[in-house]
Image (cartoon, rainbow, N blue to C red; front, side, top):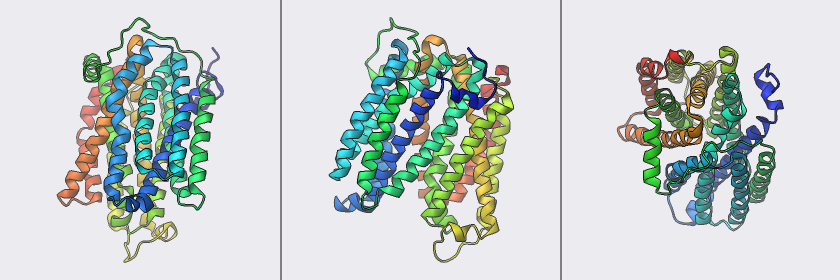
Length: 430
């Protein structure tokens, strides 16, 4: 096996590049579909069907997350029982089929067909999740795990960003439904082709009997992982990152409009800055840690997250807010706006530096025969964290707390639990 001298050299290897492309294209397609559907619901389908757009959008978000609760345990068992590259081929082929039906639903503006298909796409993603993260430690050496996870994390956020932007940009165009339909099917085909080049990853437990009882299997996976302290604590840390990220990403439109007086262009700018920040922090990890699986960045990154949140709060209070909504050009004329952008970038970068080492710890400390099921456990807790974040924000909003004060509360909370998070993953992994 040739020695990898730099992080990006992994992108020239067959044991990493096909999986990276498969993951990137899958994440892009998910968000291209979701973004197009949300915009279509907001500006056309909700009114046509006599329904409340906000309720429908909330339903869409929940239905995409729900399969991770329902199917992750089963997906983890299947991924540990069968050869992984073959399973990925099947899952990516299913994506092509689903996207063909989705293209038809877009053409006929079939709202409930699109919503049902989004649920199935969530299911497809739930089955792919345990595979992608459990393949990495089979194909990469331990000193490459931080680099590999960093690239996957950076690529995923860039895919989320580009898919979201493309979906929103094209769907309301006169030919938008055709563009989106061709795009989702074409990307699904490219993802399937990329998956064909993923090297084999043999099944660690081929003799395992799959438990099809979803509640029992889910509890069984959680019960198995919990005693493995470095793994379970890393999972909790990653889920905390997703909790924080879900709050910020979901509230960018409201933050831009109600706090800063910006329009949808400003909200999109924040999404771009946040995604680039996570990508930067994720790839910087490997340079700092020099390929070592270590938790030493957890505490500094936690502190950086909170300080960036405090900085975001301060600049948001100082920025000038006019009587009408402004676009990006006018927003950037205020010097305080650049402080907001820098704060968001640093917040996201510290988030990437916080999460990537914990993915590597989780993978390196997981028993080989349970790696996919450990990732399934992560999917379950991540999904729970994202749902909990929605409940948390909704509760505070009902109590009259503003978005910027919610950000401040999160920053303070994160700072207070920094010692706990640092002890949880622990320097003993260094």
